[in-house]
Amino acid sequence: MKKLSRILLLCMLMQVLPACNGFLKPHKMPIQQGNVVTKDMLDKLKVGMKPSQVKYVLGTPLVVDTFDNNRWFYLYNLRMPNGDKLQQKLEIIFDDGERVEIYRPLLIDPKAVRKARAEKARAET
Image (cartoon, rainbow, N blue to C red; front, side):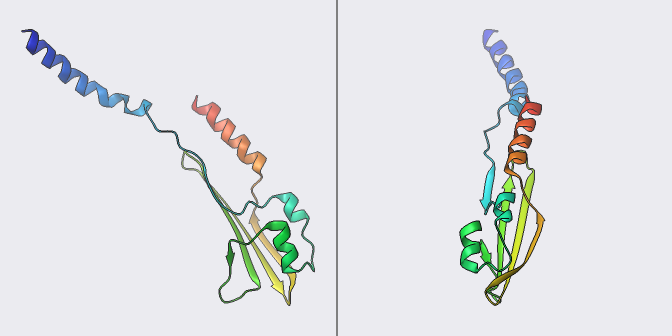
């Protein structure tokens, strides 16, 4: 009889145990890739700067167009543990060794990212 009750108890525990799966999750870190370009860095850029000066301010571009060396791309991706993604793309075009255009559809403010992380952490707890 004791053996049968132990087997039944073990079977019930095996059925209840998968319900605990939601509580045990591994810790995931935010994944950052690419060049972080802040507003302060962009404010330092001036029309007429040479490529070496732009590289000094922004760092080495992540991608230089294969067919046009006068087109630089600064890309940044941030993937949060909850699956949210932030993307930034900055394109700089040079004309005869001088910067002429900047395309920046989205800039990431590092303070805003930290604030969003803190708010999500508070919401999850």
